[in-house]
Image (cartoon, rainbow, N blue to C red; front, side, top):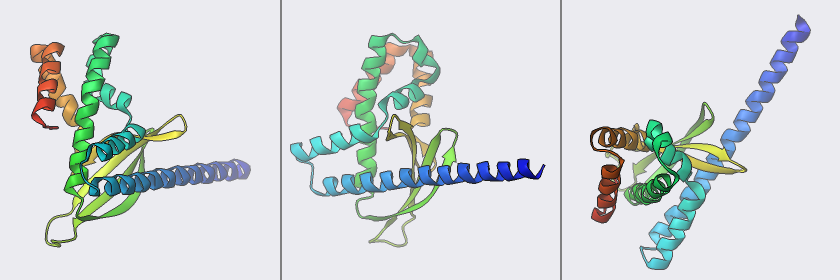
Length: 198
């Protein structure tokens, strides 16, 4: 009995150590990439710099997970061509939303909080406080990450409790049920052309 309890305690300690290590790695990843992106954004919106920002986005965002999460139950009904078209357009919308968050918090001090585990993901919690206006309410932005191969990838961004993927999923599901997938794609392209990410 004592051996069983000891073994259980040992396994729990190993699991906790592994979780802590993975969590720290996710936190370090977000810190490094946020610093890199903020530095690039501060340099302006020239064509060359814009390309560098997009390259970082491609390295950190899991477009497959974002696309499947946004379509959810409708993903299985789509052809390979439809999935590719959807993901290509969604990719641009997500990049724009991420860039919007970066622009919004450029003059903010970002504090990195705890890292929590949720199922197969790690959530890195951050709070951004306006350094020019201390009375302004801080903004919470959380990043949900998981491992794709050896690399960390962001699968969702939650701003002030509002999930990017959940918001898209709700909107997309409503449009598909009412007007079909073709209408969803038409509206997404229109959204891109208008410059909106919401």
